[in-house]
Length: 427
Image (cartoon, rainbow, N blue to C red; front, top):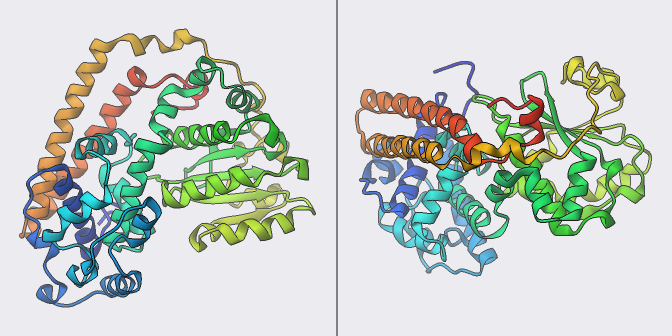
């Protein structure tokens, strides 16, 4: 067990946690049509010698929740067949016989091939296992709740928000589409990814005083939010898996208050980017802010709320952020001009036209993914602890290969951002 890897991440899992991620993979692979023998991961807990606390909690939650995936299906207009809750094993997970039927309902309207493709496309330099583990941790290791969340997110990415299109198009896409409100957000640099906190997490520096709701449509604001979130993901490097947000409320007034983007950001982090927030600093909140906060805090999940820290001065910030990464305007040493945005020249995207190189890298990526899937199948089916451990190490090695492959592929599929151009983003 590696001590510098946080618990609940690949490379630092308990036996029960490893079982849970195997179950999630078994569900995903089965839905994709990949043959996998799942009896080892879905047999009842009584046959494996007892029930852990996490399993007991899952079982308790399952009984409270009624039908499997009920909350998600109600929200998406679907329905599940009665009696499903009785078909789960004692770990709160779907049994092998129910997997196909339930996932067909859960992913209703989505082809298995597009779900599979989108899963691999949403990876940046993060490891596949760690991506799925975010959802398990967010749902307290309840497999079926994690699967509901994963399905909801994949549907959202494919059919609704389409964040992969947003990040691949970058800032230049806003200009090409002439989305004036989106462009204004970009040029004002309302949010800038700059520096790292004491734990190596990238910092998103937000200046709400620059925001006015009339400057953009709601859709343009959502698109800008997604651009910042997805750009921040590019700054994450294993084992760092979350970011810090610094809201600078200097000169904030009621004219800047807009609840819509706040609600959207909260919903994104809680529903689609779980376990991605390190700290959220609310700095120099003015006297008008407490009533606003009393409204916002009621929207927050307790876990997200626990990560919010109110700060007043530089001394408060240096407890979490090195002075060299604190903006000079807040008493730090970073003299970066946050108003220096310049529209990228289209010449920076010359590699997007090099389809031959892109295709060659993607072909290698497909081969790595196939090896990863084959290894994952063997890992799920393995009954020997030594063999399972060796297969897990093989998966970690293949994850590293996928990360390296994305670094090579990135300039051939993603428009260059201001961070690529100014050198602050180095994959």
